[in-house]
Image (cartoon, helix red, strand yellow):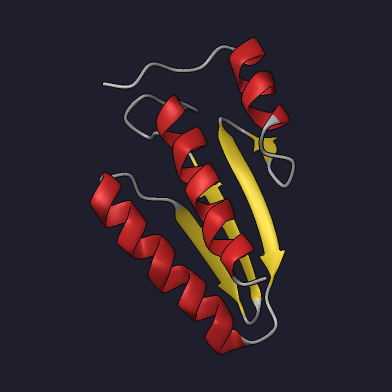
Length: 97
């Protein structure tokens, strides 16, 4: 089981994730893509990663805008699993250019 990160650890993690913010017990990132198909392409890739890692984000899809919310539900907050997934989501988005 992953342990909850302290407030200090969360702050440190957010220092390495400039596009993310802290929600209520979660990490949150919203991004607007160039098109709806591109947004779905990102969701598909993140779904593959989530399945591989057995750690699944909440994803809100609004046309070209995606909102990712990461929280380790079994622990009731942010863990290293969320930080790792945020880093992988950033890599997917960075690969789009």
